[in-house]
Image (cartoon, rainbow, N blue to C red; front, top):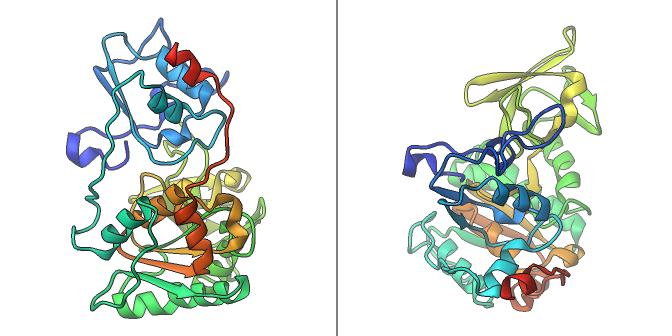
Length: 337
C-alpha cells in the first residue's frame, strides 16, 4: 500500500512480488498450498487488479485473514472486480470522504469534494491560491501553455523543481495532449538531449531525465511504477544508471524497454502517488477518458498546487457526466446469489 510504511512500520510490496512470481514460469508460488503469512491484507489501487490477478490473490489468502480493498477508479484490466464486490452487497463497504493529503482549508480539498459531488470547481481568485485553471482553446495552445507553466511559471512563483517536484498527469497516452507526446515536448524544454544520449525503444534517454519503471524486475528489486532520475549514461559500456533513492540501478541498453520517460504520465499510473505540484491537461480530444473519478484522482495527487490546462467544457463533461464504459461481468450476479 503506497505511503503505508510511515503509518504501519511495514513497507509496501507489489502484488506480484507479494505472490512471489517465478521468473521462469511466470506463475505465482503463493497459493492454497503455500498461503501468505498475514492476518490482514490491504490492497491499494485495486483498479490495477484484473480478474486473473484477483483470483490468484484470493487463492493465496489464508482463511483466517481479512482483506481490505481500496480504490477510486475503474479497473484497467479485464472485469470490474471492486465495483462488482461493492454493488453486490456481499461485503461491508466504507466510503472515505475526508482528504488528508492537503490542509483542510486548501482549495484543492474544496474542489476535489466539488468534483466528487458532480459540481464544477470554484476558480475564483484567492490570495496564495493552490488551484488554477488555464484556458487553452486547442491542443497546440494547450501544449504551449503547459510547457510555460511547468518550465517557468510554477518554478518562479512557487520555487519548485520542474523535473523532480512537478508532475504532468494526463487522462490518456494518445494525442497531442497525451502523455507520450507531452513527454517528448517536456524533455526538449526541461532536459534537451545532448551528445550523451541513447535512443532505444522509441525513447531518447539522457542524464537528468525523469523515468518510470514499467514492469517488475525482481533481480534489480525495482517495480512497476517506480519513478526516478537517470544519473549516468555510459556509451562505451553500453549501460545506463538510474538513481533509486540513492541506490544506483544499472540497465544494459537492451533492457531499456523497462523504462519510459515520465515528465508526463497517465492519471491511472499516478495512483497511490503524490507530488508537490501537478499540471493536468484537459481537452475534448480526451473524450473517451473524461470521467469524474479520473479527474478527482488527478486533482488529489497534488499536495501544494494543482493547475488544470485546457478547455472548460472538457472539464464539465468529466465532472457532470460521471460516465463510465459498461463492462460485462458475472461476478456481481454470482456474489448476490
